[in-house]
Image (cartoon, helix red, strand yellow):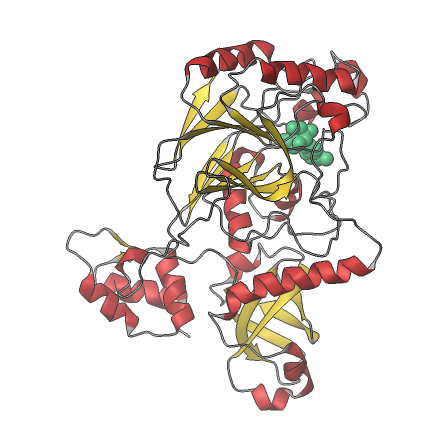
Length: 467
Ligand code: D5M
Ligand code: FE
Ligand code: ZN
């Protein structure tokens, strides 16, 4: 397989710069002749060769949307859809489901061998390039700075070494997270105990993915983390937002969790609450929603401050708390997949940011967009199991990103972020709460009182500042 640097060099020799997507495509195709074929077809004046210059690779839109209700459909995560979580056995189903879903996204792009075959008869594979797909059981950096990853498929387990000195995939290997599913191509050690990695595959988004765009006008407003009841909730900013909504042409308002501040969420919270009763917090929030134009369809999910179980998927806010919510508000689970006139929106509160920011070198709360890219590459909203993000091991893995949405909406970090990764728009919608004492300690500087407006015909976001 050609090294990344070699592919870049060959394009440079032909006086072209090249996008990393194209480099990884050529490596996956394992077809060096593709370089000349691509270069031959590039129009004059092209600065950087991108996926659209690959001959024969057409943009594919996973097109037709069948809509029961053409205005609003909850595809997954409607209230009450979360099944029961029972005992230990479901963890096995859960991980099998995650593996099946994610491995099938990689399988078409590489030839693979069951791990058991490699481990049991290494002599048969010693001199060839071997491919495996497995879930990451453990990932660590060795004393010499290499990356050692234990990978499991349904047949067995093997250790994979990413050499820091030679391999192009090393930078990506540093970002390998527990419980994500990866493909690896490499060479087996003499005794079969170790696979020396040459290329890392992730489920990822196809480079020719084209998002769906609505055929009729429609705008969605995206917000998160309202935190009603907290003494740092920004009522004035919210009122300016509510006034603005009166005259806006928005058809939808999506709220990605932490609707209220809750009670007993962190030690000493009672000293930072203006409303100390959870029912009253939801009633006040309900009143705020009732004051918004009733023509707007509101969709609201819970977050880690809301009065439902922490483990994800989190159930919708129950009737006990939502009695006074207006009729134009639909309560959904966290996460949920919505369909707004053909545009799929994956809404996830974002508890897993805490885990991913801790594990990914260089990641920061200030750049939530980069973490959303990492979620999309892994096709997982939350990768590690058993860390800060509690996950309910159900029969199927609702944290797998499938099908692809047009928009990924998150919150939780309280700092706005926007990204566009292979056609998917990622928005972290920020918060309506100014800096809390906890965030001061953590050195987190929120960007409060903002709302994002997305035009569903163009998928262009616009940020509105009500602070
Ligand atoms: O989260 C508000 C902010 O605080 C968000 O930026 C994440 C951060 N946060 C929340 N919990 C933790 C923990 N346990 N460690 C580090 N950072 C955290 P909210 O969910 O609104 O409280
Ligand atoms: Fe929050
Ligand atoms: Zn939160």
